[in-house]
Image 1 (tube, one colour):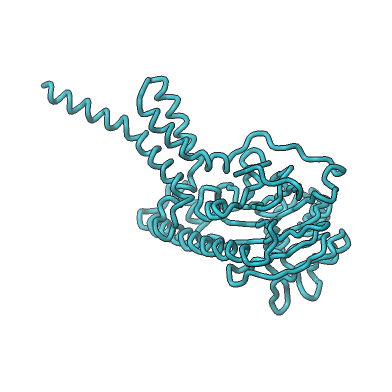
Image 2: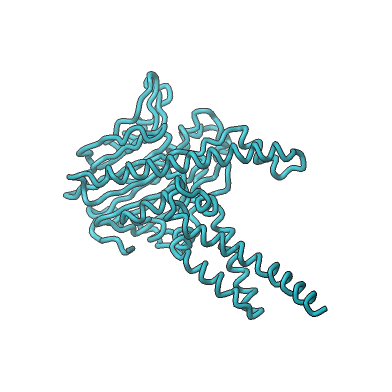
Length: 385
């Protein structure tokens, strides 16, 4: 009789440990995500996508177990603390206030705007903010860029027809952006990534064959200093209408096991291929940024298409690049507002004698991404190590 009671007690004890073990495993995989190449092991990359859920579950369980005087609270607390860098990269407290124009229009400061503009809504897929429908999304977006009055503008998924029937550059030239990098070109249109600058461009080029939108860079002369800035748009998951329809069925009652299995395989296959491709692209960009003769001040900004709990992000940080959001941002910094849950996938990385004195993820809804804006100082070193 006693042995039967012991077995029952042991079973309940194991069941009681199971939730803590699952959450601890998820948090450990998130910790490993920054350091584990997905080409070797893909599980940490998948776990990283749900980092906020793992973290919330872990915090709730720690409180419960502390109140119940359970030792497993210590296990979860250790797993949470291991993710300190992931936490600071995912959520910030109160950011630095936006400086008045008179405070950043100085020789040693510049304002930067980075925005994935989704082809300026060329295909008419975005619901605009103009209640009277008097302006197209492109007109509203360009007016927004002009109103931000940044010194440097990096646009991803840029589009402009060669015959100027769908034009962008003339408007921005009139707004003061006299210096422009050369975008990729097809027979009838320009597309990809482009840098508009109020500062002279000393040198420009591309890191080609990385994605549909080649990475462009420009060495800008700011006063007596040179800044190299890369405008990136890395491999996307390329989810299509079939994938979106499958996700919608996950919350419906219809469907069968084979349907869910095939749909899941399709999604995971796309995610894995894109993740591996992004890691290769990041390596090539970092190698290019270290070429002999490159300026000591370097920025890499744009659409990484990956969230902070990822190997691609980890590569950037391990190469001494700081994250403007971490140093000067606030909140969660979600920059994507499209198909899948909102993540921070757009960034401003930097190293050298640079320091963000302000950073913000704007709430403009002219694209499926939100714009990033920041004010940097050229005379202060990064405070982050």
